[in-house]
Amino acid sequence: MAFYEYQCEACRATFTVSQLISEHEKTRKEPKCPECGDTHTHQLLSGFFAKTDSKT
Ligand SMILES: [Zn+2]
Image (cartoon, rainbow, N blue to C red; front, side, top):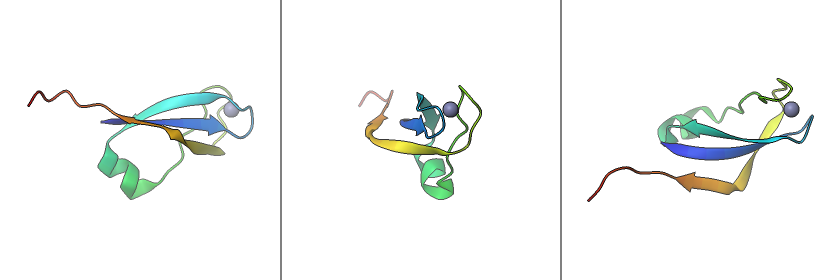
């Protein structure tokens, strides 16, 4: 699972979405803004961080 940070182009709200990395690469779909419901959102590249819970 990875987390992607997005910003809404309508209301400028930023929000984080958790997606499978494979799912994110496959769909390239922008999520809906949780604040105003607009679908014109773009990913903030600096907001990427991955989370792993495997202890190796
Ligand atoms: Zn919005």
